[in-house]
Amino acid sequence: MKHTRTDRIVVIGGGVGGLTTALLLAHKGYDVHVVEAQRHWGGRLRFVHCDGDRIDAGPTIVLLPDVLRRILHTCGICDVRMQACDPLVRMHFADGTTCARRADPQAMIEEMTQFAPEAGAQYARYIAQMEQRYAWGVANVLDQTFTNYSWREPARLFAQLARFGAMRSVHADCARFFSDARLHDAFGLQSLYIGGNPYTTPAMYALIGYAELAYGISYVEGGYASLVPRLVAAAQQYGVRMEHRTIERIAWTARGRVCAVTHAQGSIPCEAVVYSGEMHRLAPLLGMRARRRWQPSSGCFLLYIGIEGTYPDRDVHAFWLCAQFAQHMREVFRTGTLPTDPAVYTFYPSRIDRSLTKHPDDSVLYVLVPVPSGSTIHWADVQQSFAARIVHMLERRAFPKLSQRTRWMQMRTPADAAAEGLFAGGAFGLAPTWTQTAMFRPQLRPYPHMDGLYAVGASVHPGGGIPIVMKGAEMLVRSVF
Image (cartoon, rainbow, N blue to C red):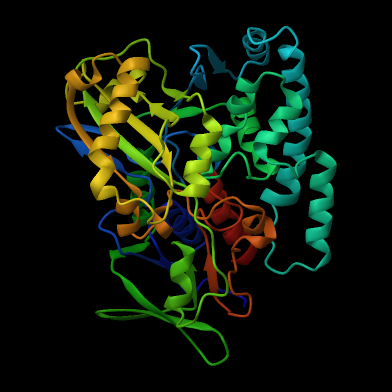
């Protein structure tokens, strides 16, 4: 379907994917209308507020900062200031040793030598192969749309991946390079950034860890969620109409062409719809049955904590690994049980940003524990005791007297995420499995036979993570409109 500048386009969903799409379309002169069911904009990207403090509620790690900056500039947003994190992330192992992931190659090689004399050379081989794999992956996967692919394409893709050794799991791929088992975890857990099991996620996703090392991690001054009001203001400046309503149906003609969206108060005629939401909800909006069953990503147990005073020796990003990381991953992805000895990620933005608290001498902390998605855990019965366990572990290993210094604390479970509409309570959309990757993931045109229907978001190719979701919006607008 060929679109003209006189077409009205309805964007369903005011998350980052929807807002970016709306802005890019408005820049091209389209009549754009964004409809969001929740009372806030930004989707997963938002703040938790308490007692005059704020902290990011969802995404915290800013990967591919140059991609983010470029797309924001394309949207007319040029006032975002970002600060590079150094170290990128510090890994704390159960035996008390640490590994600081750094963007500087020489510093990283020196960091490796504490594990074994040959670890520096192992790291150099790892980076050399990842660089080749990354260049191929960007050209052949991230920058490609797979709406209409031939039967030859999957075979060609998998043959190339096999040549790169990327048909293994992320964890097994790391074991090829590093002799020290601790480094298998340190270089393999980045698939958790998008809710994937390091022991089963395809090694193609090891590119996340490479991108972290090659391009760094940044912090958006004021918090990642400070991007949302900028996106909203820019969209309104360009004439995008925005309202909070729950869409009940996407109407389409007998010839398979989208013609309107309906809500409780009426309908909005349109020539195209961009759906930016959880993919399991799209088929019912069309009055159809879902074509396949999707697998959700992992869930997250989250604590948001306001702290009296600061911990000046703590890093912005840190992982506190457990003695049995493989067991933790089995509990999350296979048995669906409450983790017995979990690995924990902490985000401590007050280390570099004192604007987040009402009193500048205080601080805020974000704690994330990978947990099962779905309904196998009755969180109402266990969340308080589980939170106490996590706080106790953090007091012992990272933040002394944390419980005594806590001014406020909020928590969020997969049950809360499911109640807000996230697929099975998973925090990252669809899991990054072989059958949900590249051409097997929902595409920018999720139903190719239906004219005027498009999709963006974390569960749509090219995938999750704020910059990649924004890149997907850019790809859609460039390739279709």
